[in-house]
Image (tube, rainbow, N blue to C red):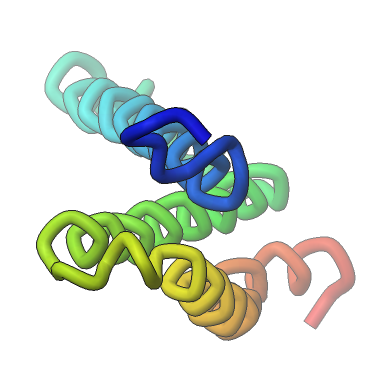
Length: 126
């Protein structure tokens, strides 16, 4: 193992990659959100059309993906803080990652109905 290497391409490295990917996805969402909100000043009718497209089941799946990205990014960010600022953090980074993943899965299961309930009702009826 090379000196100074913490992750060695295993779980920690994948969480590093996922943290960056989710950060970019969240940034992209915020950019689009600012643009579509600014549309209301240019053309309220166009804004209404855009917001109308957001009520489709496909967009509901994208919203669920957004929730997944935000939750993972936030939880993993707390893990990164612990690894960086807790003296025993590097020693326990793998266990903390699996704890983050467990909490993330529980929260994602809990988010299924609130985020996707409307889409399911729209596709299969109430």
